[in-house]
Every structure is written in C-alpha cells, then in structure tokens.
Length: 440
Image (cartoon, rainbow, N blue to C red; front, side, top):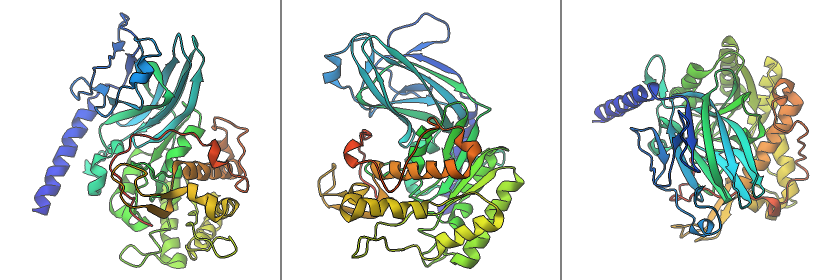
C-alpha cells in the first residue's frame, strides 16, 4: 500500500512538473485599472487564483473594508493579500509599482512561506514607487532524472514546493498598482541547507533567519534559495534528496550555506559524532560544492535560549560548533560564526528580554492556542531578523565579494546592542493552525 501511495504521489508531482515546464515565464499585471496595452493583464478583486489561467488572488486574501473607505476604489486594497502566478523553476526579477493618488501607502512584501523581500515601502499621497526584488522559485522534482525530494507529510502544502509563486502584500496600507515578472538567468543564487533555525517557517509566530535574509540583498544580482527544513540533519538532508535537488539547480558561481547541529547531536539513526562523522560529512559536502564551482560557506549553529544563574548562556550544542570551526580552517572555507555572535546577542538581551526573540506566548495569543507556548529553540520574526543581521555582518567580514551585493553596504549591526523589540514592526502573515516546527 505504501508503495502504491508513493507512486501516486510521484505521478502527481511529475504531472505538476509537466504543467510547470510549460508555464509562462513573463507576466505583466495591472491592479489599479484596465489597461489596453498589449500583454498587460488587468486583475480585479474578483480574480481568484485559477491554475488554468495561471494567476489570481488566493482565497485566504481578505478585503480590508476600512481601507476601502479611505482610498480610491480603483486600487487593490487588501490586508494581507496573497497573489499567485504559475511559474517554471528558476530565478525571477519582480517589479512592483506601489502608491496611491490620494493617500500614503505602506507595504511589506513576502513570498512563498513568508520569505521577506521588501521590509517597509512608504509612499506619500500622489507619489509612486517602483520596487524590485529577486525571487527563487522551485518545485520538488529533481531534473533531468525526474526523481522527487522526499517531502514530509506536512511539507506537501507548503507554498515553496508547488508550481506557482505566491506573493504576500501586507502592512497598514498596501496598495498595489502594477506587477511585472521577468526571468533572471544571470543572478547568483545563495542556497541555504539547514534545519528549523534556518527554514522558511510556514506558520506564525515561528520564524528563522533564512527567511529574513533575502531582504538584505540587492535585486537582479542575488537570489536566496532556502532549502532548509525543520528537523533535518546532514544525513537526513542528503538521504531525502534535498542536497541532490540543490545540485540540480546550482550553477558555477553560486553559494551553499550549511548550518546543521541541533538535530545531528541527538541519539538515533541520524546522529553524527562531532569530531569524526560530523566533520567528515561536512568535508564531503564542501568537496562536492567545489567540484561544481559552487562556493561553500559553513555557519555554526546559534545557541538555544539557556541561561545560567549569572545570565550567561549555557552551551547546549556540545563540541559541534568547534568541530565546524576546525573544518572551516582545515578546508579554507569561509565560516560564519553565528554560534559566537548569538551568545553575545542573547546575553545582551538577558533572560527576560530574550523572551521576545523566542516563541514564548501566553495561552490564547493566537486562534486555537489553548496552551502557552514556551519554545527556547525557535524564534519570532524579531529574533530571526536579529540573527539574520548577525549573518550579514559575518558576510561583510568574511565574504567581501558577496558583501558587495547588500542593499545597504553601510549596514552595521552589533550583537551586543540589539534593536529594541519596541522598534520592531514587521506585520504578521495570516495565522494558520499552529504547528510547532520539528526539532528542538
């Protein structure tokens, strides 16, 4: 029975792949008013996503009636709003025109599983802003072999594994006028391989640094492809063909960031010993990347939230961060020491303030949440963003050619002086049924 089910799933995925391969790659949409120009598609509020036509609003988008009463009626005003487009695998440049004739607008853009693209774009009344961002689109087919990534049951509904791109428009007053989508065959891709501390977390209130970091890079030049998944280890990631999927997409000049420890250290079939099998596996991944002219980058895992009686962080990760440091030195591979930076960051917060960075919420803070949330491994969007800032600072120090592609070359972050939580303003995405990430 299991073999029949597996075959059926593979067949459905292959059929989806066939549809995806024939999908249109260039799109131009107008959301403000019908346009007679050739090739521009007008999208009304009633255009719900249809896989046959290849675009439309996702049904979960909801109309913000309070916003309608204070804006022109020919603009798409939803909060949050999800718009999907069928696209083949690849990197794409997105040109988004925002603004309104009569009112100020404020827009945040995420894609797929809440991957942050544009943090906060504001326009004054009568002003318009053309914003660009670059997105990586994927499905679960490994081409040309037509094998499939071995997804966990919970992943099959994730937006980043389907054959379409879903864009989330959010914040206090998002008004979308135009959207243009263009294939980008020249950008470098940063592939992320890791666990729940890296993954594009699908559900609020969880988040990870990998889904925050795309907003730090310039469009056109860099696409971030986050292939991390909750609960993963180095062994499981390869066994489930996630690494093979990366190799099928990676091109010379791309990057592979590798961050594993939290689950590798645990007893069981996926366990790796820090100074032997863990180091050996890292070396094999580095060699495989270099053979493809992909630049490997090692990332030591951040600490868990575990304080001693003096407010200092307990090391719950054993020898694994040090083992990774040794591999980086031995192989001449860039090292982002997120482990060291997270210790400084957490101790700067202290036991109380750090609660805002981790998923700690009283019961009934979210729909269908009868019990309190006390998670000392996984982060809120605030904590994830601060860790992403740590990663960016290490990129600036260790990988100068990649640092040139940051949106703000002068960006500076000191983990000893984190952003106050009170200054954090990223709006939440739609809250789905709560589902704690695998791993701890």
